[in-house]
Length: 132
Image (cartoon, rainbow, N blue to C red; front, side, top):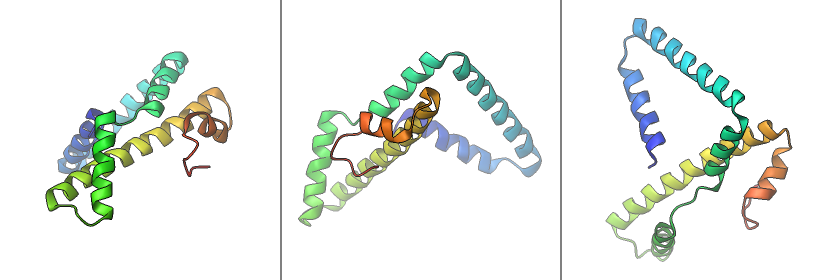
């Protein structure tokens, strides 16, 4: 799991513990932070684009991709142990989270560049992808 994902999960857990009257202030604070971040990204489009490109191009390291492929194969042949299955589920969660972040970054980059999303999908996603 990536650090930003862990931080978001921690923030959500903390928000769930806040009593109703304090929750309003917490949301207002988060909205203010979000607004500041949005303003900062609008004033530095190149930095924002660079960050989006990093997210779009992020993949599992090759060793982890190999391990994921191995676990998937073991799962398909029904030779997987319980521990390996749990490890496979963790990898699947990570990949799905990266895919969601990648999709969000592609949408933001399309808006930033003012191009059709399909153009960016063709540019950045592998040709064997089922998207678009």
